[in-house]
Image (tube, rainbow, N blue to C red; front, top):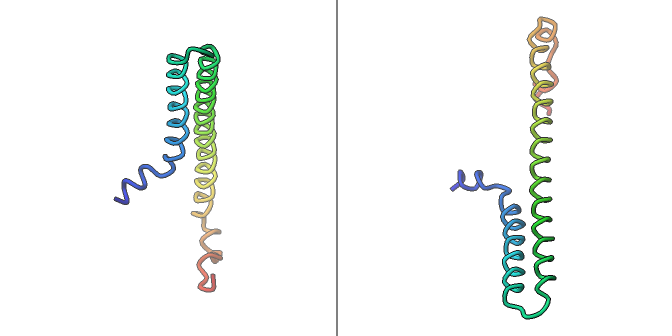
Length: 102
């Protein structure tokens, strides 16, 4: 069960937003089909919701690219710090995180 929770952690927000948008589009298209009046307005509203979903998806993709770039920078920095701790000077110096009072 823990594996399932970890696999879908944070996914509920995406499911909720995409599902609400898709449901709104379906309801607006159904309203445009069955309504004798305002068909054009329902179609425009469905198009606007679809554009909002496209914008939302683009934002998610951009954020994912940004997070990958941040991870790369952090990993490079950590690798540099770890490499610097393998020197004789670094081993001679006491590590402040090895103290018991922390």
